[in-house]
Image (cartoon, rainbow, N blue to C red; front, side):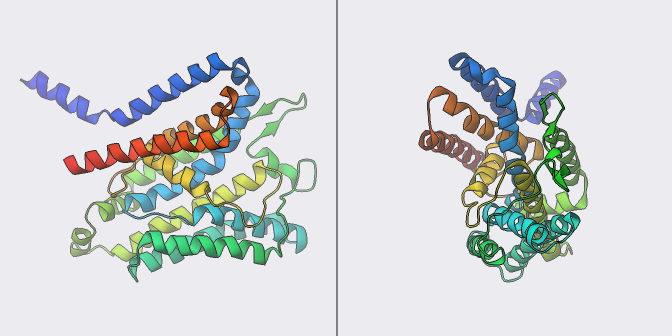
Length: 328
């Protein structure tokens, strides 16, 4: 009897969704490798990681609003806006690079705080609120930068060290994806924040039962705003990763980036209805989406098919989440 109970408790602790994602990742890697031998090249891994950095940072941040039962649609265009403004201050205003970095992070955090205040104080729907700030960020980046393309310092120039933060190039030309080390450290830190700190506990509690949390004497508005500030701060980090990984940042772009991040979090097990989510799951979701984006062109499927397949994967994940929510 006791053995049966122990086995049942062990099974309950196993997150089947994560096991399924890992299995799919292995199957996809084997499939792409078999269909296109060039997929197994080292350069493919570098390309995959290059796509992962900014999506992963956005996804980690947006996991917090999603757990509260909300969403943050402003992170995609916001990423481009913050990165353009930061680079503009350096290239056209003669500011030190640390000022550009600081402003990039502060802009993201400020946008997150604004979203959180509107959602928690005015109680406007998160979808509408962040849709509006998404459009604001899209236009604001172009206006503040005067329509100029954003460019962070290139390798070999003054302050060109930023290019080696995520991709370290050795003297023989070999590229080391050092950015993955930083990502793993951030994943570990944010997992602790979500599972072991008051910020994480209250974020989950808001998504589970906000009214009960309020009646228990907790300042719900404060912790709700913090969840959105985390999303904004990570959008700022993603802006740095994007600007330091790619050559240029074009004003007015970024729409759709947020869908990859939100989709990855949902695929990784974050509930659309709130109250449930994990940083490890979000990481696995990003890995899956990045693998699809990188691998599908190797088997002859271009952008349109990539979007269709990614959409199907997301639809399945949402359906599973809704079924589980109804059972709970």
